[in-house]
Image (cartoon, rainbow, N blue to C red):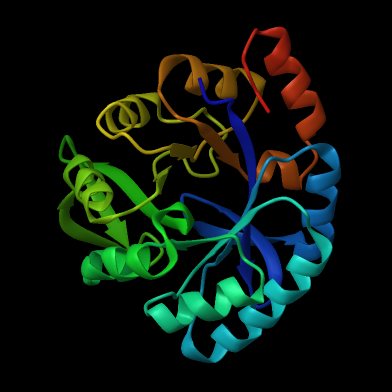
Length: 250
């Protein structure tokens, strides 16, 4: 069985780490490179960096930041935000990223998933899915959670796997930043419907939330932001606590 991964996420806006609740109300959470080094020292298995307001102008800035991050880290890291072409991915991987994450661009152009998978290998292609319950159905949202699509979450996840995604990063918008626990219902549903790794995201607030998501779903990784950024629990403490609960973590 795959050992479970603990993955801090750093949302980047204008070169600074930020965090909000339900995708809004962003506040400053610190310097991304300093936080990344801290998390690596504490035992993070991987890191995710998302350029949450990516535009054409900011893309160059983000590539430079990725280069700076790569110089400081020895653990794998994923980058996402505004990626829409093979060339975007090439630049980020050349800058030192291990994996890339695509979201809105994959929904707009599903062929992008297969193009990237063929060019770079599925192992470095993560499809991020922002999901929200609406009228008793789970829907995919894009553009930083601002726009509901016509895609139902379960259908889109299966399609992404078919097209060549190597991993799914599933974020529950209902849980995001609330610290009320991961959305076990949708995470279980999606993780049991695919054969590739799934990272659960949205709602982590305490050790028990990680214990629950690993015990009650097939998620192979759990991602969190605020509880790490604001020092509510360290990754060391979290991993030791999970080991005491007989969970196999890296």
